[in-house]
Length: 239
Image (cartoon, rainbow, N blue to C red):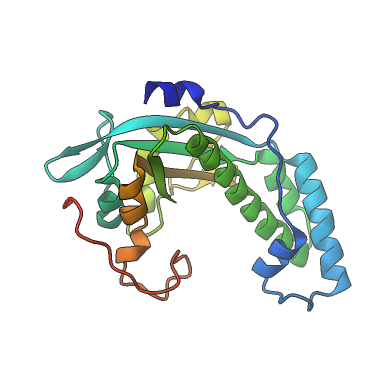
């Protein structure tokens, strides 16, 4: 994976926020065609200001996946993925990408200075923008993968059965200070619109089959579920 590491840019320079008004309205709870002109205008103005104020930044590090004593570790860092479901996904991978993105502190200030309904719209749009930035970061890495290599879904502390306290260990695996991201004692990030995540890299056939923890999750009503119906994964390496 040396060539992969070389080909990855650890900068979001030139990256733009690319969100549609329709998407923001959907996440605000509005159905298509039922959004008032006032809300539409507020969303439109919010996206314009977000694009002006945001300072998109990302970084990523590639580590080998190691299995020791039935547990999954990221490289030789001593960081164990303390999640049965996510560990199962990573068990079929050769490497793990550790990524972090942020929109910067000016976005936080923008969110906090509006009226209650403006704050809600701004917060929703900024959250979507941060996810879009992480999408672009992962896509950048995936395009640099060798032929027949693929990537799993991405996972963040606090999701699935991975405790949010894992943020503390994850922060040691990338240069958070260079991105200007800080972690509180309660494991909340500042700037607020920042995301950390990991995803596995391995043979495409295997990650396509095992790379989605939702396939083997019994929580079928989960709002973050990434499959439309209950499916079962074949057995992978026990973790």
